[in-house]
Length: 172
Image (cartoon, rainbow, N blue to C red; front, side, top):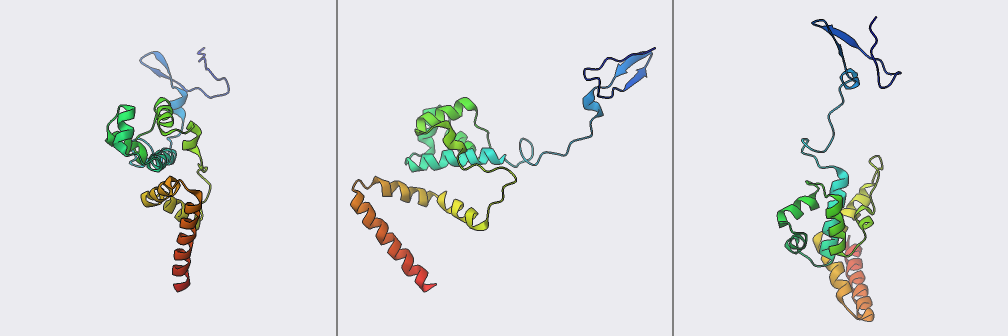
C-alpha cells in the first residue's frame, strides 16, 4: 500500500510512478496557470503605486525648488536613478524612501497620500485637476507664491490672478 504524506490533508496529492520510484507532484504543479501580470517586471508597465510614490517624490522636490541632481547627490545616486524612481520605472525601497522623506522634509506617509484603490474610478474632471496640479509650472507657481513673505502682497497677487482668470472665462 502506498501512502503519500501531504502538508495540507485537504489538498489533493497526485502521485505517479517512474522507473519504480514514487514521485509526488507539488501543489504548484497542480494549480491552473495564472494570467500574466498587468504590470511589473517584464511587462513594460510600471506598478501604479510606484508611479504614485514617484510622482509624490517629484512634486515635493519641485515644491522645494530642488533639481534631480541635488536629490540624487544627497542620496548617493545618479540623477538618472532619481528619474526612474519619479517615473515609477524603478521601485523605491523602504530604506531609500525613508532617506528621501528625511531629505525632502516630509513623513513617509506623504508619499502615499491621495492613493486610491485599484478599482476606484476617477472622474475625467478630477483626473484633469490632478494632472494640472502635477505640472512643473503649477508647482513652481505655488512655490514662488509662498516665497512672497508678506501675506498682504500674497493676497493681492491672488486677487489679481483671479481677476485675470475671470476675464478669460467671460470670453468663453
